Amino acid sequence: MNNNFEISFELVGKKIGQDIYSDHGILLLKKGTTLTETHIVLLQNYKFGTLVEIEDKYPNDKLNAKMQKLYDQNLKEISTLFQNINLNNSPPIKELINAYQPLIEQATDHTDSIRYLHGIKDYDEYTYRHSINVGMISAVIGKLLGRSKKDIFLLGQMGLLHDIGKTMISPDIINKPGRLDANEWQEITRHTIYGYQILKEVEDLDIHIPAAALLHHERIDGSGYPNGVKEKDLPFLVQILSVADTYDAISTERVYQAKKPDFVGINILVEEAYNNKLNPAIVFPFVRYLMRQYIRKEVVLNTGDHGEIIFIHDDEPHQPLIITNEEYVDLRKNRKIRLSDVVRK
Ligand SMILES: [Fe+2]
Ligand SMILES: [Fe+2]
Image (cartoon, rainbow, N blue to C red; front, side, top):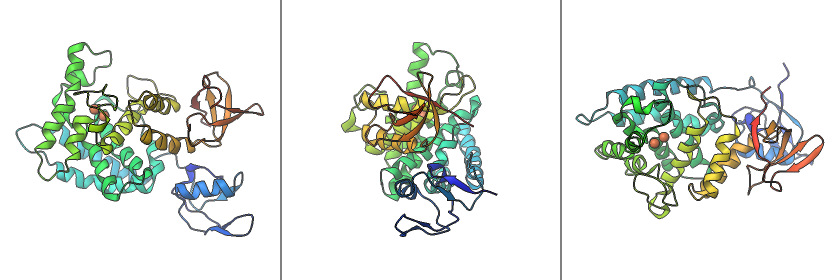
């Protein structure tokens, strides 16, 4: 079987099947090395355009089996906890957090996994999957930003529990497919306060966890809810969670919404950063990471043209250099042209 692949971020987590040398004969990577994002960047710099041999089977188009098993177990546990929660007894939140830890470890070891989180969801499962996803994505962003292990796990827990207050809101409102009226919307916004009330009662819980429930819909310019607080009163870890929450909420398919094209989530994050809603110091490293996974991929533009992504600029990762019909187009220079979707083959 031919196991040679183009160098791309899809290879993160794979083992290489050959020693790789630079053009000057310097050993870059040893056979059997498990590829990380840093290795991919190194290979893209030194071995651009060549193929590398991979030991394991490919392509990996879903979560790996171990992660899928952990994901399904967590889904069951969080569904049970969320369904049985009431304010009169103390929910087993500590147990839930402990059971979630191995999944966060897996996610931060295989950061590309967050690409496979956005399958179709049924009504009831949506909040549970969203909670697990936001924890995983927050932890991966924490890792990208070089936060400590302690912060990374805390981010996972904040994500897992950020929407726990939704358990206090009628499912008819939560799952309503159409527009919400003013009262219904008011009630939805209260999931932040309900979540805070539930979590602040839990003993020995890091203060960031109830704070995340209360503050994750706040925006740095003060335009969020429930209190309209601004950047200086929003802990940085909560700001990370807000980016992960926004990204998952946009990207995840729901029963009553058609599948969103790949770049919708990325474009909205960038817009929110430019509009001073989400912190650009978090959004841009995350978008850079997401965009690097599309290098050498065929994409569709909002003009309908097709092209291939050649280079991701560090400062404007969402507007890469592409090649269309033998012509290089730098999307930084023409802001009306945007990426719409990726072509799946
Ligand atoms: Fe929320
Ligand atoms: Fe959320």
